[in-house]
Length: 118
Image (cartoon, rainbow, N blue to C red; front, side, top):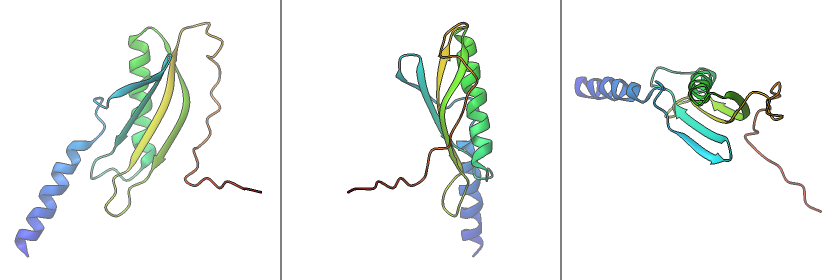
């Protein structure tokens, strides 16, 4: 029983190394458009917390290019049994004066899409 306890604690500590710490990969997915996704640590329960960290990282990325962050879509999922909290952010890095740079109107991506057919 003690060995099982040690294994659980060790896996929890190793899992905490997967936290968002400014090292998530930002991937280009189009002209001036990027995606970043990450899972939280073993101790992160809120997908919103992971999403907030991704927004900070995306903002730093755009600022390093001398541009402004313009969110496109985002999604997050809270932790559940056997699942880490996670989030994804798609965004654009736009220059001042770009017509695409406006007040964001974010909408959550649905977990389920229902398609009606005739």
